[in-house]
Image 1 (cartoon, rainbow, N blue to C red):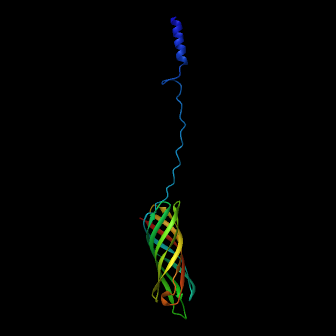
Image 2 (cartoon, one colour):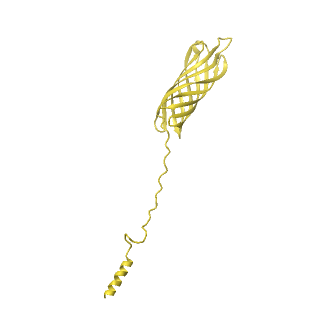
Length: 196
């Protein structure tokens, strides 16, 4: 009887499921892959200042077409809304292009000041934008006149506090300071900016 009870208990234990401490390995959970990190785009909010240099092709109804180098200083402020950036800035460029020539009095465009707004769409580390605003052109010996400009550009963040860009602008100044000269400078410039 005792032998039968021991044999029955041994069979019951052998048939019982494995519990903690059992030599059978515990089931392994399948690991879940972590989601790929989302690439962060730069934050454009803040002040900037820098320089620009490029090419000025100016058309005049009196002197015809003239061209020269152009370059100067830039400053402004941008605000980053997420996918969209809005900003305002000023430029001051130096150049030397003919407004009028003999037999008219010889007049040269010496510099251009701009007060501008810009708005653009972020794409990766870059910004595609449109721009426009007020412009004032000054001559060597015939005063200055005001007009407007429109254009577009692209800028990319090289580091957290330095960006590079290129900008194309079309300007219009009608009847420059009463000279009957209508001038239309078109500029293409490379820009380098420290951002704060």
